[in-house]
Amino acid sequence: MKYLIVGLGNIGAEYAGTRHNAGFEVLDALAGASNVSFTTDRYGAVAELRHRGRTLLLLKPSTYMNLSGKAVRYW
View 1 (tube, one colour):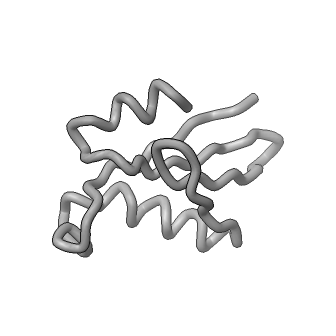
View 2: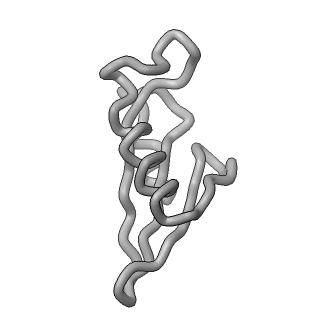
């Protein structure tokens, strides 16, 4: 079974390290702890990892937070 985990954030250097990118930072930490890396794909950066027989698809949308529904809908 696949699960989509979306980390919300805003694109752009001006948002790096702010509360607006907390979702991106959580997914970066999860991916780092699991030794997986993100690849750029349609509507965002995606990584896939397996945990206890489940597939987790991690998504960092490349849209601004208020438009992230487009990326979530696609994935």
